[in-house]
Length: 316
Image (cartoon, rainbow, N blue to C red; front, top):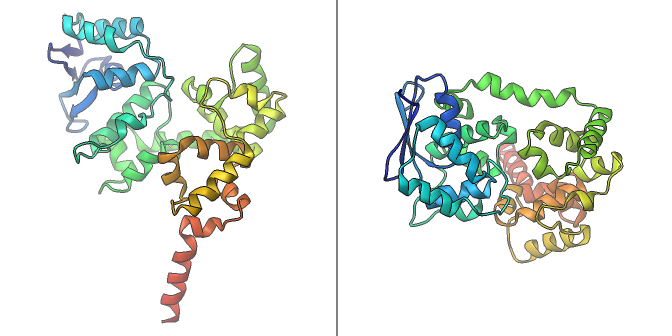
């Protein structure tokens, strides 16, 4: 019987579009392999490549070896020996990288090759769907947002190219508007009663991204929401990279300014993500932390320069 996935001994994986479960196969393979060839929704097949880097990333996302092998066999019927060995060799890391977000070590360009290509962004859409994460523009990682701007296509164009509906994907962000402070607190308490942690990374990985966003939007910060629910933010932070203290956040921001580094949020997040996360937990958002450090947030965003330029053009 034909299967939606073919796996060759050189690591090439072909997902054949047209099967009832080809979408599930596509979203899963996007988590363990690199997208190599795809011509849009009209394609008859999608070509991926499994290699040591893609398997290591899959391990860091927390994909279990047993589950990975089982799913691959379901979709393909069998695995070449060297692919099985590769999976056994690299699916044993335990680095708890945030699901759906490439780690810096793999996203860093090498040999003058650009990492964030159009195909990589399409793959990001698929793997986020595989992890149950939204792909509306606001909730995409900053690195993806930034590189979408560099392409001639819009976010909606790319979503359509991925075979998805941009209207449906954009609508997922509206769900946050139905949240109330009481519902956020009740959901936090229910999750805690079930023995789960409340840190943002865990919430997003386990399908509670809208709860995480609502907590920040309604209470001003994740920390304030956790306290309102009656829990200790420092204890709930357990399992994530160690959070910087409020004082340390201000010190690091001032230090970056003094050494000539940019304080635009997207740039800092790529270079020093824990500083941005810590600032948002303590101050509500990145630019509030910048202002608490005695700096002009508009100037750091580049807004004041644009205002000055626009004013000068009007005067002329």
